[in-house]
Picture (tube, rainbow, N blue to C red):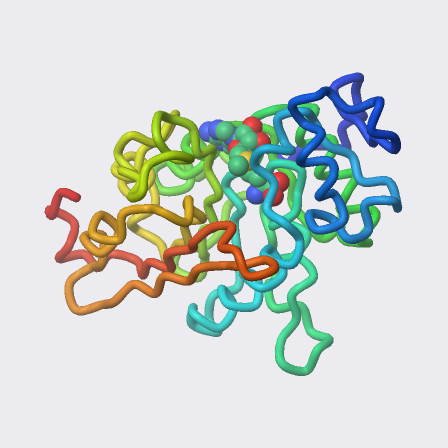
Length: 260
Ligand SMILES: C[S@@+](CC[C@H](N)C(=O)[O-])C[C@H]1O[C@@H](n2cnc3c(N)ncnc32)[C@H](O)[C@@H]1O
């Protein structure tokens, strides 16, 4: 697995400027385009699927700020495991230390499975001037972590990072029955990756999970390694929660034989 080159925008990548261009089922999302990307008119590109899962920029900015303060300053690398069209990766790359100038992260890696979506992310990051500051990967982030932890020589040099100083950010797809309708969302019904799968893959490192706002807090609480606590933050836009993020510390060695 290696760093991706700059990918071309394809016919699946769109910058819609008129309602008439927008498929009917996406029109309500497009109407919120300036909440999602305040600089949409600068030429933001999206795939159709991306409209359902993109993190609104004000939320992504706040998460980037909170992640920096929740984890130890010794953490230097952040990996966005579900890069999408780049909202979180861009905010992470723009995050600075308290001096307002020094980048908070020495390295930002963004991994995305779908080539047109990654092309949108690279293009959008270029509008914010950070495309060159992000190491882009076209591929499966579970495979990446498996190689990083077990077989790092199979990764390109840009992707071989010190796991002790790396933080993971995951905004997985929220498919599955019930996330929009259930009062409390059972995270083990989330598709295609449920909470148990995500946690098994991420538990060795500090990680932040971007989850539906109604997610079952009892399931999240069980992920806390012994003697630690998990911070959970609801992120609101105009008074309504868009999502919650659970900030989960790395498991210690003695937690390794606990099954979650
Ligand atoms: C909810 S979206 C992420 C949105 C992103 N945070 C943003 O603001 O644009 C989930 C993304 O994960 C991608 N994805 C799904 N499975 C993946 C995997 N195993 N590895 C990497 N990306 C994956 C999907 O193609 C989709 O673009």
